[in-house]
Length: 264
Image (cartoon, rainbow, N blue to C red; front, side, top):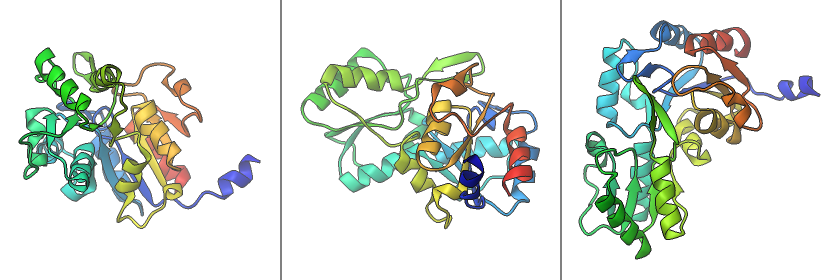
């Protein structure tokens, strides 16, 4: 009954777009991505940019994207750092922040003295034995472990690189506890990203290069997911999730063309 199922789909109102690996890789834009974004902006949809990046604060991220020629407003970006900060404020805890120093501005005003929680993002400078052991002891003493996300790896110019996931998993294993994950692929992250759009998940589509965190997470939240073969994508990634991606495209411009031609 595929026809009837498709008929039940609501008209598309919101497009969620991943950043690193989908629009850009470090300081290089995906070819044609700026022009494709302009074309998407001409459509009657709300656009939100959703990212798990913990390498830099939102202000620096926006500056990087603007320099690459992307027309993006700060209030259109929803980051896992924002989601983590929201959770810290809700729980009223003082975190040991294992995040890149460039991400710290997004935690301004959060007390970190005498920590009673552990927050892990991508922090290559801090992932050494002494710091991991400090986090381990805090968790053993009852501190909650909060993972900004658990990505296995991400794409850099010189190849794939370990994400925070393996370090979170190590702390989980050593302390026999489970982390609270705030970023993609968590359903709450996608629902938070839609807040203020007046849109339900069935009226949204997600475009990203991570089959599990972007596409699988979005589809589990009720959206459609489009996987792009750029960034961290590896052959046969689309077979790693069930249900499979709604669509797999070569890149962001191709995904935009599909949306403009078939989903509006």
